[in-house]
Length: 265
Image (cartoon, rainbow, N blue to C red; front, side):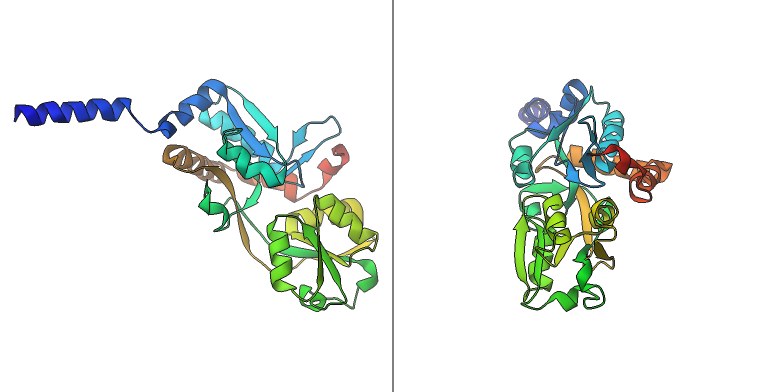
């Protein structure tokens, strides 16, 4: 019996002192701050204003999250999209809050929160095709040139649902939109929130917005794998802001009006 008690005591001791690395993540955030990776080019989720500050729906949510977690400070880490998951994995940041679609492929390398929004792919069409193209299905012809952003679900959807069209990828959303405005491609396929704003900002009178989404995609926050306490905390934060009205307030600010466009680059 004594031997068993000693063994049990040792197990408790080592269990308390040799806890997994993730056990200290929330304490680290309280001490050093919350580091958030995002790419500030995805309106209205994140964008750079005229003063060079990163603003948008996700930065506002990040500020609330930092407060909720008791973080010492908030650091927004501007990160290129093609390197954003590697940045998380190599501990350049604690979380990705950048309008990222939850996919099975990405979930192989990161853990996702519960979805905080649903979006879908839509089409910005050059105005000369108004009336000729009434939905994404009409673009499924080799005579049409379509585009999206490299490495996004817009690119995946374009290739999957409009396979016969000629496909072109661009490094940024803005480039794809302007190529459509200038008539070098016939349509830009991308997430509905971005296309809505881009049409107001750059395409009004020059583009046709086919605003009926033809996919449904859950958007979530991504963290490094194997951190259940951190995941539980951010999911709890999401529940909290949806209950107390903070989420609705920010959604109204960024998705229901475009006043903020006057302050962006």
